[in-house]
Amino acid sequence: MDATLYVCVTCGRQDDPEAETTGSRLYEAVRGEMARTETPHVRVESVACLAACSHSCTAAVSMPGKWSWLLGRLSPGIAADLLNYAGAYAASKSGNVLPSRRPASLRDVMLGRLPPTSVTVSSEG
Image 1 (cartoon, rainbow, N blue to C red):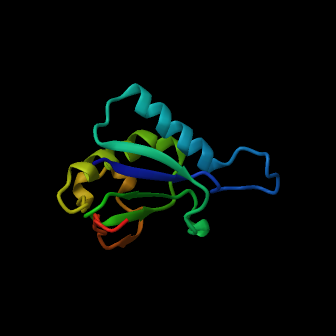
Image 2 (image 1 turned 180 degrees about the vertical axis):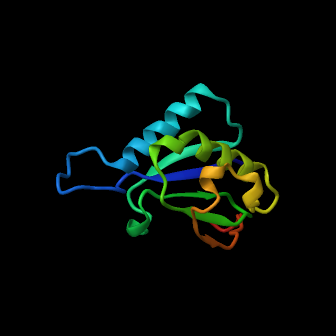
Image 3 (image 1 turned 135 degrees about the vertical axis):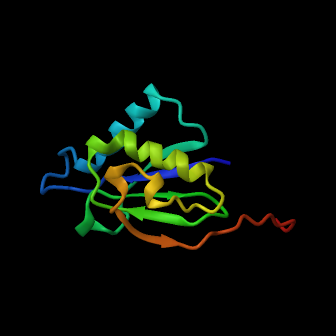
């Protein structure tokens, strides 16, 4: 199972709904970095809003059975670091990546965490 890195593409939205957002530039930068490097067990998805607008740009990382994290105050220039963090998250047992194991640009960007969810398989339809 892979970790999912969600990047808010509506972060930094201006008055013009057709204008490119900072969040969409961050998403494209992360996708470009994925194309250049191999990051096993990580997939990247865009999301319309992570409801942390005052901390724009935002992203979240999650995986069943692990803590999920909300990150803020991100920029397209740290796309490689964000992908590096997502890889460390995927490799961690609990979803906790110590600040000393995060890229320096991500040491103070954690806005919150959510408890692990579990995947349950039901034999009922």
